Length: 101
Image 1: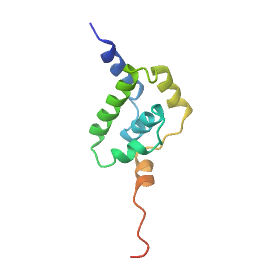
Image 2 (image 1 turned 90 degrees about the vertical axis):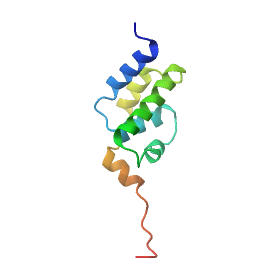
Image 3 (image 1 turned 45 degrees about the vertical axis):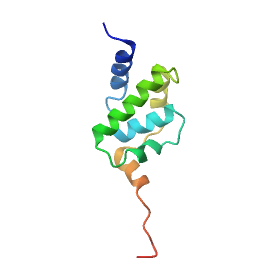
Image 4 (image 1 turned 180 degrees about the vertical axis):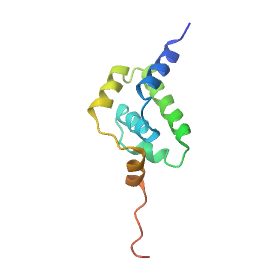
């Protein structure tokens, strides 16, 4: 018999199935009301699957603690704009040191 946590994780995975790691990180940030690219920066140097797994764990914990619902996550997916992985990485790239150029 599946537990509520395993059902939540399965539902979250279905919800984010078509998203890349940086988009899932942005969804997670929106869900926790933190800056959009905060978690992208945190996971910038991680492998794609490591970042996805970490964000899914955060989302599952937020659901289990009642901080948001699957419906809220679904709304966030449709109501917000998301950067794809390339765009998020460009926005997080360090600015060049113009003094040395």
